[in-house]
Length: 390
Image 1 (cartoon, rainbow, N blue to C red):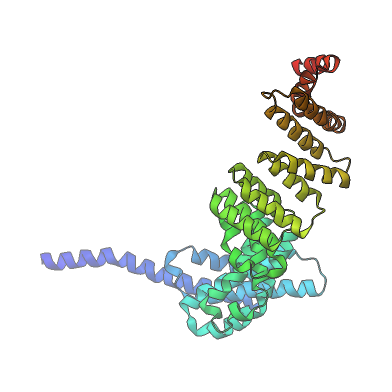
Image 2: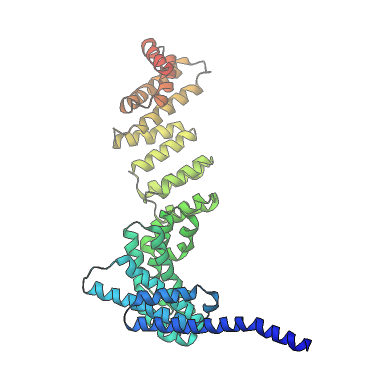
């Protein structure tokens, strides 16, 4: 008797659960049927709402019938939007491209649940896939870097998806490298080093944009404080593109900041071998020679630059500073006349620099102070003294 009662109690406890599951099962079937009906009548939004509600329940997420219906609903929305755009009717372009990504995501999920649909879905998605690239380009033009990146990433990611294994995008799709470049560019615009570097290797294959790709990579390495790879990228960029605006000055700065003046001078020489009349390259060589205390050579390159551009201020400062430094080496010598003559040579250069950039008092002030002091130019010395005291 006790055993019978226990069995009855167990059955009573189980019955509501079984009824709930049964009811729940009927609800899924009913909701799925309703969604299918909505799809047939073109009410794709209604169908999508029903199906996404079903998928909120983790027990339904392995139900391929729900995903198949969801795919059809979103595909219907995409085709509906495509038709409106073809007929030049008002339609939100962002929404159109959003449906492309959404459909692809559903197709990839379905591929793991129902691989028997792979061929048909792959054929469909292969036809729609170019709009992932187009969606990225559309958002790129609007400056929506993060959203554009997602589209280019989705486009590139298709190459590793089993759904598209028959299409060999890595070797046959000629736009993969371009997509990688624009993804790298978006990562750079977001100041995100990880996203910038993610597809950079592929982006480098696109030789038409390699100069900018190397720029993006270098900046990403700098953000990561990876000095070794930052400099290595600058070196490669300069070797390939010595006239590109980015690499030369940063490579010179990097070597100079580390005290590697010989390397900096070698870079300047390489640059001048490509363009011996470049003001930037001549000024860089004049400056690095000044730092290396090769004063006579620094003056030589400064004067060459002055001849090319008489209104460029910095060569005058370099030449004047070089003469002042030479005079400084003579201050302990017996021949004071030679020292004064050297200061006199420095004078016109530094005064010209002052004339060209009067606001740079912190640079020309101390140098002129020293020159006027050593040349006993009392009136000029007093004026500079007053300026510096202010």
